[in-house]
Length: 496
Image 1 (cartoon, rainbow, N blue to C red):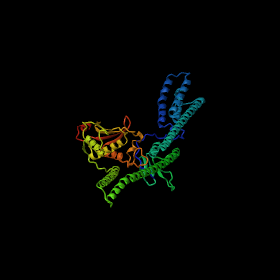
Image 2 (cartoon, rainbow, N blue to C red; image 1 turned 135 degrees about the vertical axis):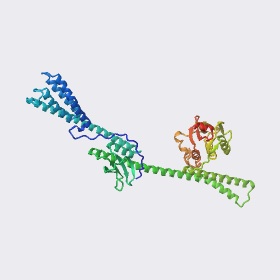
Image 3 (cartoon, rainbow, N blue to C red; image 1 turned 120 degrees about the vertical axis):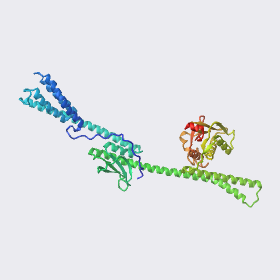
Image 4 (cartoon, rainbow, N blue to C red; image 1 turned 120 degrees about the horizontal axis):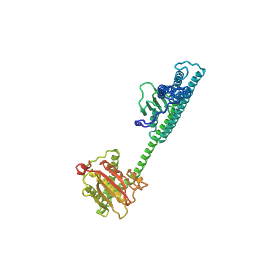
């Protein structure tokens, strides 16, 4: 299976599912706290009510005395359920017979109706207690149904989102069923996802997840904790099905990423071969032709010989630059670029780049800060970056416009800006212009290797800087080189 190892989950935030509906008719459906509260109410309120009614009793007060004790039974039933209600009914019946029914202060029942009244007392208490228990059971079942629906929605959402769906499902399974730990183990024995810690004893359940092409499970889900009841097992079957879908989705995504990477590699290889067939063949053919002419048997004049030598020298120099660029790109992508950083004067590097390109005031406008401190950079790499960016800006500038080169101190770093006023690059395409073997606007990759911007970005980052494109306010593209200052500069100490 191609599923990658996933990170450890964050702290649990989901709530466990409520326990399923109780089949008991006792107060267990309400919980022991409510049952204790019901008994406490009977023990405390019963004597207080007896004392108050006994102090106010009269010959005609038996009716409201009976109703008062009946109200106490109903209140206790609502609070604690069946058992506290029956206890209160028996206790209040004895109290009524002892204190309010003649003969008082005796338990004797001299009238059959009193026996019937006591029996009705208990029956009413049982009925009210049953109603409360049934209501609690229905409320518990409703809460569990709601929690199960929310769990299924969450599970389906995790599968649809795809990213980290397996880990999210494992985490939610542990939370929902109150387990100590859940692990998902792949067919090769690798732990694909886990949440919580497994228990040391044998309280673990292993469930197969999905089926592979050979009929074997794609993974095993280990549940560490107490056994699950029947409703929980039915819900777990749904989660396991969703977990199988999430694993399959992850595998398909990994396969798609591999296919995309292969397609991208093929595209780069095709672009490289196309560019090499054009850029290398042309100077190589010119050099071969020039050398062949020099070796010819016919006599050449001095001017013809000089012209052939110049052609061969120019062609071989072009080949040398192309091969150097290819080697530099490979070093940048491999992370082994050699950088010899030292103190560099920004103005000197800019002027050297202009001299290399034979550019003058008619081509470039300078806006340099004379107080700009020294830069921490490699002078050779910085000059190559400036040459590449200047040549690119001139190539895309309209006829008659000048490229602006500015240098300023911004936020404790030096910023060198190469500003052109050409057509510019749309924001959604600005990140792709730094890819090797690409030229913006080209469709056939026959106008060059397209390594200038890729090398410039790699060289700048190798020197600890950043190269970012920006839109020129009046139209065009601005390439911003941000470099750190030399450590000995006062501005560097202030920035630190």
